[in-house]
Amino acid sequence: MELIDKTIHELHRMLIGGEVTSVALTRAFLQRIAETDNRINAFITVCEEQALKDSEAADRLIAEGKADLLTGIPVALKDIFLTAGVRTTCASKILDTFIAPYDGTAVARLKERGAVIVGKLNMDEFAMGSSNENSAFGPVKNPWDTSTVPGGSSGGSAASVAARQAVATLGTDTGGSIRQPASHCGVVGLKPTYGRVSRYGVIAYASSLDQVGPISRDVEDCAILLQAIAGYDPADSTSVDTPVPDYRAGIKDGVKGLKIGLPKEYFIEGLDPEVKAAMEAAIETYRGLGAEFVDVSLPHTDYAVASYYLIATAEASSNLARYDGVRFGVRVDQGRGLIDMFEQTRAAGFGDEVKRRIMLGTYALSSGYYDAYYLKAQKVRTLIRQDFLEAFQAVDVLLTPVAPTPAFGLGEKVSDPLQMYLSDIFTIPVNLAGTCAMSLPCGFSSAGLPIGLQLIGKPFAEQTLLRVGYAFEQATEWHRKKADL
Amino acid sequence: MKITRAEVEHVAKLARLALQESELDALTGQMDAILDYVEKLKELDTDGIVPTSHAVPMENAFREDAVKDSIGVDKALSNAPESGDGCFRVPRVIE
Image 1 (cartoon, each protein chain N blue to C red):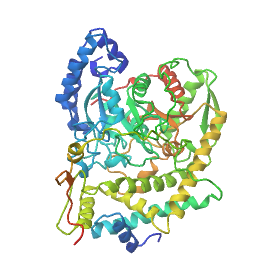
Image 2 (cartoon, one colour):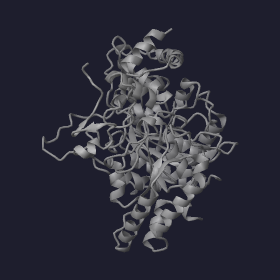
Image 3 (cartoon, rainbow over the protein chains, first blue to last red):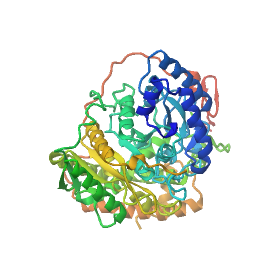
Image 4 (tube, rainbow over the protein chains, first blue to last red):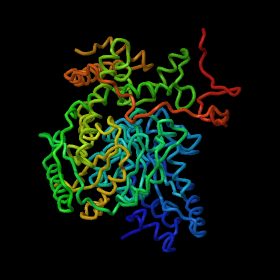
């Protein structure tokens, strides 16, 4: 097994045992990026020089016996995280030249622990998309089959872990943007409860839904990263001031007697038969481990996509008003006054999907339509949230597919925005409810594409998700499979 | 039709987007299809349902009104397309 195939917890033991240095490790990943990224396009910026400097500093900490679990570990960040002194584009032309003036909180917390940031990852522009085809820097390709999409919007974050270009990465999830690409790329991804991780220094898409989370090779790494980034932050007044538990404590306690709910609305006609078969096999695995299954219903599931595309676009239209060519980013000025400068800058700087969502959101908030669209969607959001809280009266976690199909082909859904939106049908409700969920590899299609299993937990029950996910991983080998790239 | 081309043009003005004719044409069809899809929300009776704007129950987030350092003029201006005299420079606002 090569260095680049290992997990954070394995590499940490090697680093403190003197078997490898952070410099050697960082060089190995930088070399892997150089060798493979022309095939998958996962990186927008590689921070070679800074990463090597940081790895030297990490080696000194390790030598002094001051190593944290993340010290010296090469990680990478979705290009939505402000990273001091580093270009941060959000995969948009409008931020092509933007150099972040400070670190976002999640980034600062990784740096404090001595993690080595090797680069910034490709994504759908402003995190709007389910295929990573909406990037101003070109699409990311799925390492398992480069004719298919890696999922989105954190496509680079998932693809780079699957391609062994970084040990683990951070992504963001507004409607499935961590879980769906993790599923399509055969890696682990966790969307924490809204408010568990600070959004300070994360470029905003839909502020009531956006949440930061880890993507990794296995569940234990996911726990290590979540531990590093979770917790209250005075700079984000929506971060929640409840204690952060030890996410690795109890991770091995198993699932005996645990009640797992199967929401019938997630096992529908349109579900790909291979995805369905993988879910059935996963259910059998959990039964064998002593879990009990309970049929539950989330009756408003079918309304989630409609509610989401009104709320998210409304929030986006407001959040993206700041890109006006005044304080940062690109400016297009034809000498026809201030308003013209705004309109030309935004027209030239934003891609098609971003324009589409700004337009929809502006319409949903506009005079005369607010009650019919935005307010109605927020009321339906209440019903969707209540569905989850009721289901959790009877069960500990829910088990569902992450996506209705494995990764689809590049270009397959670009001309039909609505079909693209519907590919997030199983992930969107979780963001509306504000609770936590995890994506785990649970099988492969006959074409060799990964299939993911979603575990949905009660608000702030990330610890339960990690325990349930860990039990599955110990009983299966899916997370050990490697993309042949 | 849920939305007309004239309405799309009006929304583009509100959103400060100078869209091409071809973009306005495409968006009219796409927005119409999406708005047609979201019509399904009307099937649900939501009378008396309190809207959710925030999924995690929270009281007001108060903090001490203390003076703290801010990012500073140089850093704040470091990404400006145009600046001068410690300010962001924009095209003439009042003709």
